[in-house]
Length: 142
Image 1 (cartoon, rainbow, N blue to C red):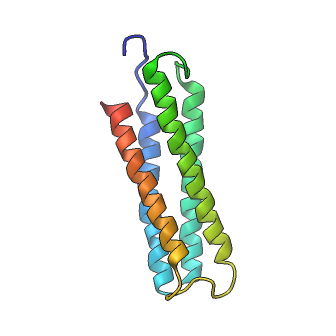
Image 2: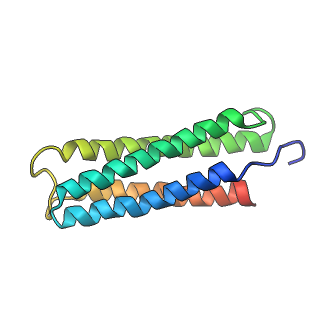
C-alpha cells in the first residue's frame, strides 16, 4: 500500500534458502535413523535445529530494521501477524527437534523400527517450510 516502504529481499531470501535447505537436512536424519544410525540422526537434527535458530535470528534482525511498525497500516499489521506466527511455529519446531535430539541420547530409544518421533518432527518441519514459501511469495514477491 501507499506509504509502506518496499521490503528488502536479501535477508528474507537468505532466510528462505536456509529454511528450504533445512528440510533437506532433516530428511537426512530420517534416512539415518531408518538405517539405525543414531549418531547420524543426532548430527542432522543438530544442524537442522541450528538452521532454525539462524532463521529466527534473521527474522528478529529484519524486525529491528523495518521502516514500519505493527500499527503503521493494514499491510504492516498483517505482515507482523503472519511472520510472527510463522516464527512461533519455527520456535515450536526447533523445540520439537531438540526434544527428539535429547531423547535420542537414551540408548536404543530410536532405531530402525522405532522412529515415530523423528518422522513426526520431520513432517512438522516440512509443514513450517511450505508455509514459509507461501508467505515469502505473498509478502515479499507479490
